[in-house]
Image 1: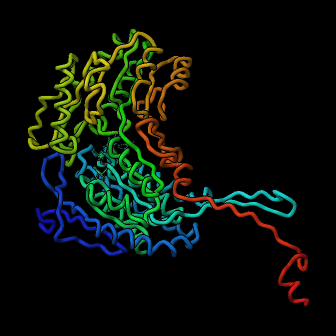
Image 2: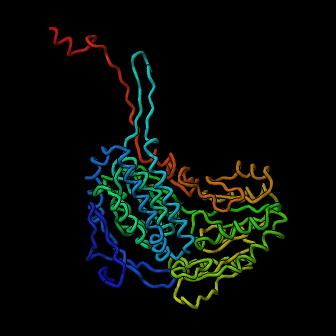
Image 3: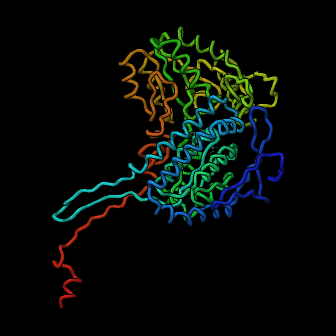
Length: 504
Ligand code: NAD
């Protein structure tokens, strides 16, 4: 399809401060998942386009690096104010291209803004350290300097927040940036970039390319790219890490997940039901911190589990691009809906029970939307396909264990390691769980323990490839390199070669 069809929302690139709609380039459709309509055609940028973006970022780097950190932060303050002023517009755009509810989009945009708030304070984290007299008359100091051109490659599920995990901090540290958002949701990133422009960011400091594998490969191998931040599925995260590091880049790559929620027999029924429903079905389960497996321990199968099933059956699915809001929206594409449905089928075929069945959901006001109803698969066993694969849809697996030890053992068998939660009234059980569970973000009576901007987004195992995570101090470390200077100053005349020469 042609990118010049005028009924579609344009998807321009932004290179060196110039917005440009590319012609003569292959495109890929962007949908409104609520209705199934094509709303835009995203250009699939070639290696030549990527080269233009990287060259623009490289040309802007020397001046941006020399811009005092406080001046860089002032632009980010302005950017944050513009994000607040345009909040509703961003929320609507996010919902239109992603399908999540307006409430969920507000969360997406708000968490993104928090990253900008964090980045405004980055100058204090850029400060170095000094030790006087490491030997007599000799001092040693470390300073943090930016890397150069940094790159962000992002997934479809948080069109606003995930790109903002990366570039506000990178820019605050003095780097220039090239973002390649998901080709499924390019529109929110364009709106946000226009606000960066309005905030007064110099030309070329931030650049936007669109596309898929060709664009990604060109970014991973470009000699002027110094660092790559990636968020997406585990196989691609591994590929990004391996290819990027092989080409000498610093890489942080967040992958997929399968998160366990332990429901203890003493868990508060109302609060834990609300927590698990939110965690499993929020954003239609398209969250790397979604609760994908509830582990019901002992008596909880007679208390929390029936309440969970009942609440799941009540979840209303529907279009989110209008005033009347459902509880849950569509999934991202028709293909993804079909994949989720196939996985549910596989679960049932392999012996799981299905007390809440979202397969046959009908949405009469939007019959072409990509809907799957909220589903619970009970009595899931470790060997089943649904226990192994990240479903990334509104499906909650339920497994049964007799005690906490067995539940922790089960959670720790997962090869992922983003998050895990426990619902209990026992401090002892919570402490034991926190100490022993094999993942990087732990929730206690909280369903989605996604850490906020000031803490690292802390995946472990196959959920993360790299050393320094996004967000918080680790984010600042990732986007800077330390320089250590050791210095000695002679007193005038003593061992001063020029002085000695002058006296001759
Ligand atoms: P994805 O891996 O398909 O795509 C992510 C990015 O990689 C996109 O920009 C895409 O264009 C690019 N890409 C896709 N295939 C590629 C290939 N073969 N070669 C090079 N680049 C390629 O992920 P998605 O479907 O957009 O997002 C969902 C996934 O992201 C889930 O697995 C989810 O768990 C994960 N995710 C993880 C986190 C986290 O912080 N751990 C956060 C959000 C989403």
